[in-house]
Image (cartoon, rainbow, N blue to C red; front, side):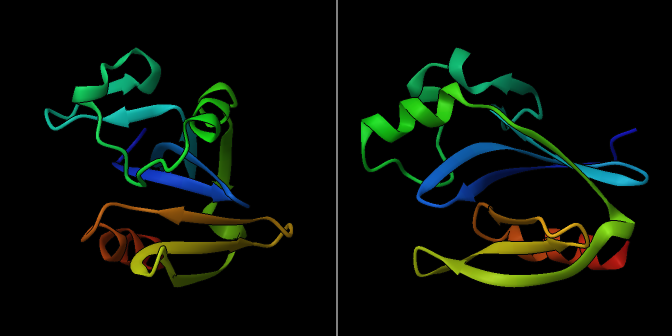
Length: 126
């Protein structure tokens, strides 16, 4: 059962992947390629017209945008596996979190402004 949904962008190297961060009972999920609209509906990013979708991180080149839309990843993070969470800056703005897991994985996630602190509080309260 999903308790909270947040728009996010997963940053991996120089690539960004728009998606959702879903909070469940025992784990959270990072799902690429979907977005949450203002009316709380979930839509596939590829099926939305450009005027209806405002990316969290503006794309600077069209080539990398096409690559990031074709590759989709879904990650499952158990709350017990989370070792550290740090607030980070991305593109000189305080909008990101970095999550470190016990298995050596780490995730750099960017959020819309004013959402990062809500997600941080949610993660540390679990």
